[in-house]
Amino acid sequence: MELYDEIKKDLRATVSDDDDADDTPVDPADDYSVTEYVVTVRLTADCASEAADAFSDWVPVCIMNLKSSNRADTRQLLPQAVGASCKEILEAGCQSVTVLRKAPRTSVEYAYEPIDSYNSHVYEGLFSRGDRRAEALEALGG
Image (cartoon, rainbow, N blue to C red):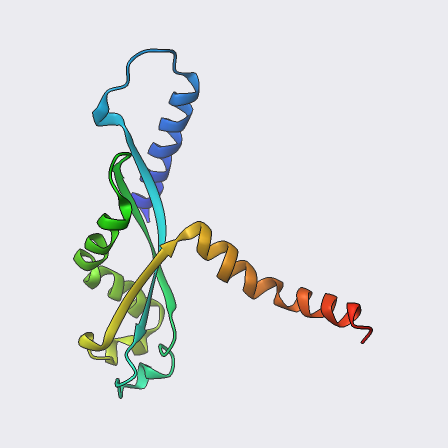
């Protein structure tokens, strides 16, 4: 978590430096961005583990920061980063839900999406579902 905080602080400092910058040339080595992704896991349908019920659908287990050049295509880089970090991602899931340790590693599938997309479509959707139902019921005269 300390590394995550350090990256976020570094990113904020870079953004604030850009706001104060004059027309001095920018060093291409400093031209980078940090993008946050939510990484989720699920178990394949043929998994006969105790964890199969809890992980039959996508479960968010960690946030991954990808620091790359602004010229880099993160859609090509992120699958490689997730593949290289499978052990750490799985450990994050195991620390949250210990029954995942009993699942065979070969039955774990990984997915990711940008954190903004996750927040707007999944996280906020879970908490606003009751409000939307109440509004719909009221609109229908129920």
